[in-house]
Length: 448
Image (tube, rainbow, N blue to C red; front, side, top):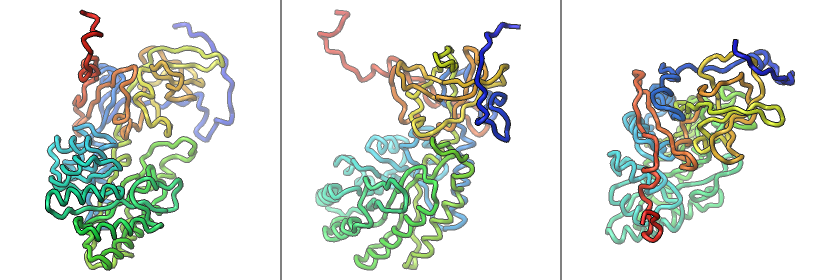
């Protein structure tokens, strides 16, 4: 037998539970959607982002069924900022989602994928005037964020000699703190009403929708009930006073995934509302408060809830060391450069197989030359050899789009289709990728 240096670890009985001691338990994941983790790592290398199309579609249909079984007019807008990989976006578009974008970059990405302007919802606090011109020309749904955008759109309406249909974004108090008051017009102060009055007085824009996005990772379905009530009440008021036909309300996104929030000790299965919880709160509010004969179209801009649990990151152990306090440390080839959401969530970390040996307190560090590059500060792990694989999840939402080209190249991304076949949907970046747009002044060229 191979000699292993003995260690002495303090047994912390406060960590005991009805499931036994963490010194003996190991979390193991041998495959993703039926494809062996070891096979994926061998073919594509590590680190490697992996997405399961089957899990994406199952989650989408569960949420869609929860709403459509309660309400006749429901539409989904895929949130590009959550994950704008082309293959991922097109899965949602094939499932019937339009595109929800928050910048001209995302707008252009959607158009390049073949999404028509009429099927794009254009949100965000910064929309350059030229981007607004394109959106107006192509018939996108523009959600106004501030009074300056009203002015810009009125000037564009005069230039084009046409009336422009628009919606406004409304922020409000739904009992959630901190309140997301940065975006749009406030409901309680009457600012949202004043914005609508200003639009009506200008005579160049026509209000057709109301939008709100009350926060992210929302654990209280009742907050959506309050949001919907206020949007419907505003709809009733402006339809009566200004004669507008409000065709849709957009309640934004923010539905929680099964991620584990730091500082929250209950399991996600306990605290995260179900799709039915969200759907019941929202649709009940519409039925109860809508005063017109016609029900508005209901838009959902759900991102995290739909994609997070379908995303995984496979990483390999590159080295190990013993810290001065006795804790075991492992250096992985994936770090905070790829796992931006690690600031808020405790990831599930699983081994590719059962390892011999007793678990001990360990730390997982990434490859960056920065002290903050910590994936997990305290995790019970058995002795891991160099080359051991770990799967980190859920990482489908925001991690790839917010990953940094810093110290290490961005890794490849693989999609596992519903038949279990792997498709490379994004090649790893390399020096050519990084240098592609750089320009070197001739006087600094060392070859001359």
